[in-house]
Structures are given as structure tokens and as C-alpha cells.
Length: 398
Image (cartoon, rainbow, N blue to C red; front, side, top):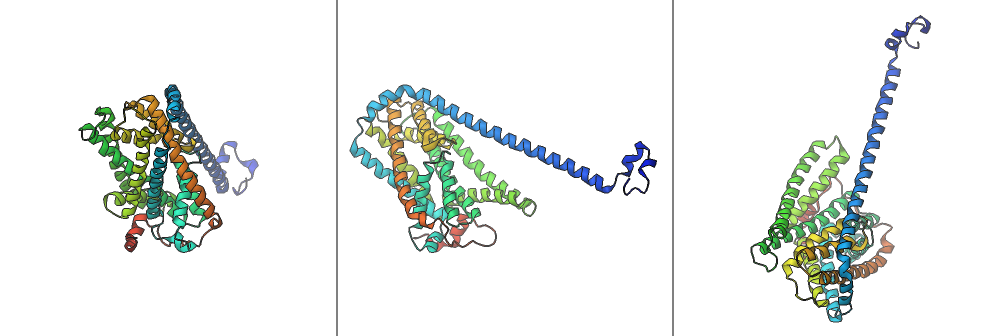
């Protein structure tokens, strides 16, 4: 036996394990550890694939149910679409352009408050072009509402912006729009329930969504604090996990400051314009399809916000999930099926056309810059978008 000091032939078979060298023990331990690691990795991958498959199955099931529910109304909807007013169509295009302009304003205030892109490119329109390109690209990527985030991240990465900054600020912008939707759902739901706004007063359709919105907002703020505490504990131990937790926490905290503390007021004004002008396109679409009776604004707001969550279903391009979700919720709130389907189809056509055209023009102007701009990387720990905004208060009045 090597290293035992006793010839192998003189060892009793039962004593051999006691003469195993340290090197052999280490080899066995390493083999066992490696096997365990591979097993855990295999299980994690399998769980991830199952979750992804379940999400896809759920998404397509929802879409299939909506199609079956809405299909009988398509014939009547097509008849209404044949009589859409061109005057209304031009007005709707103008409203949608105002909505997208609100997104661009919010994008600039959250993603690039320091005007880094303009300074690096020498063009004051650089941020506007990137925002429009992100909007247009997001309508083409089959990833639901997550497509816009992916397109924006790709563009900014190609332009040379640090990845940690892209992740935090794109997440902040997405959460800002979601939070504005939640606040609107809360306020309009309460207004419908107590009779300030005309429309349904059924508690399940008014106070129910309002309560869920309130719980979601409070839960997000509480979660942000807990994530930050955990990120602080794991800093230096699990660096990547700590950075990820810190990024999510900072993004939620940014949104809190944007909405409730007046930091970067342009971000909030832009998000409000993005929501309400888009809502007006849908509301006035009922005029375009000559719907009778004309639905109350409060009903349209509730159906729009709740139904738009269908746009978060992955693997559905061009807002297909949102179309089915909004039309379905309009019917739930009592709108006639033919009018609901026709109005949503017209609305979706307008809401796709504007960002596609604007995004295509912006992308053509951006192509020569996608090799990378000399965007300076900030040293030290990542600073939040709101912190950067507070540090540059002189830019707020621009």
C-alpha cells in the first residue's frame, strides 16, 4: 500500500480502509462533491424548464379561452370596422403619438438623467432616438411586455452603457409604469365603488381590483426594504446575488421617490401621459366604431389596466395578450361584445402603428452609433437613477 509503510500483501483485507492515504480520501470527497453538484444543477435546470413550460402552457391556455370567447363577436366587429371614421383615426394617431412622447420623456428622466448619451454622441436627440427605437422594437419581440426591456437593454449595451446601470434603470422605468397603472386602478376603483364615477359598482369589479393594487404597492415597498437588508448581509459573501438584490431594491426605491417624493418630476409626468393618452385612444375608439351606448371612462380604465396584464404573457408578439385581455375585461364590465372587440382591434392597430413607424425611423438614425459610444463608466458602487437625479438637480428644470 503506497504511503502506509506496510506491504500490501501483509495487510488484512479488513484493515485496508484504515491505511487509505489522505490523497485518496480527498479524491473520494471531491468525486462525491462533484456528483452532488451536478445532481443539484440538473435538478435546478429541470425545475427551470418545467416552470418555463408551465408558463407557456398557461399563457396559451388563457389566449385560447379568450379567442373562443371573443370569436363569435368578430363578424359584428368587422362590420363596425368598415365604418371607422377617418377623422377619428387621425385624432387617435395624434393621441397615441402624445402617449409615446410621454414614454420618451419618462425614459430620458429615468434612463439617462445626466444626458450621458447626448454628451457622448454630440447629439441632443440621442436619448429620444433610443427611447423610440426601444418602443418600436418591443412591439416586434415575442416576449410580451418584457420584449421592450430586452430591446432597450440590447441597444444601451451596444451604445456602451454599463450593464449594471442598464439593469437598474430599465427595471426602474418598467416598475414606474406598472406603479402608475396600480395607482390609477386604486383611485378609479374606489371612485366607481362610492359613485364618484359612473359605471359598475359591483364590489368584485371595483373595490376588489383596488384592494389588490393597494396590497401590491405596499408589498413592493416592503419587499424593497427586505431585499436591501439581505443584499447588505450578503455583500462580500455572495457578490452577484447581493448585486442582483440591491438592483431590484434600488429600482423599487427609485419608483417610490419618483411617485411619492417628487424626485425627477418629468419621469412621473411622462408615465402619466403614457398611460392616459393611450387610454384616451381606447376610449375614443368606441366613437370610431360608432358604439351605442358609449361606455363610461371609469369602466374603460379598469378594463384597460386589468386586461393589459395579458401583455406580460411571454412568447406572444405585438400585444396579442393585451388585445385579448382588454377585450375580455370590457365584456366582463358589461360592454357589448361586438363593440368591445372592434374598439380594441382599432386601438391596437393605432398603438402598434405609431411606435413601429417612430421606432423604425429612430433605429435607422441610430445604426451608425451601435458600435459603441464613449459612455463613461462610473466608478464605485452603482448609484440609483433617483440618486443620480438628486445629484444633478440643476437638470430638473430642463
